[in-house]
Length: 230
Image (cartoon, rainbow, N blue to C red; front, side, top):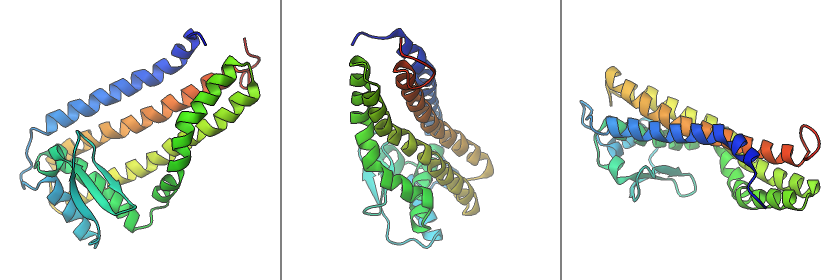
């Protein structure tokens, strides 16, 4: 199928937002990774402090390779911190590490959106690949039924990303509050943490918007939304 200029028109806003969000993350992380916190706790130590304060003793904090590959795995209760975060006592490292600790706290508190997101992972993985291909072939074959089937699968990706938003925002909010309560950072340093985590949150918003625009393109191009196909 030949390239459709309308596709670029649809995805351009989401692509621009994604690029801007990625640039903001790198800029804020690079800036605040050079500024040490007054207390001098490393990312791993700050995350451990939050877990202790929440009464969580069964989560293991480990080093993980890769830049900004930090994540919490609820299956084996492992909080993986990238090397620039694990050993660093910078504002950026503390912010990222405690955000991931926020996910562990969500897990311990049975935070519903986190459980829903975990359940949606297999379906979203299928939808992100098979759903897109089915919609593409549906347009190529001029089959609205095939596009619709693909759109249903691809919608699982959008649903996953929408559920991800409150999960990520809540983890950041927990971290922002607790690092002040526990004296891990000062009020002034908290402003730097806010900038790092807010920039990271924007990437999830951008991803959801990009997925929505992609879905709308296929639905409109096939005539399922807004009239007949050209």
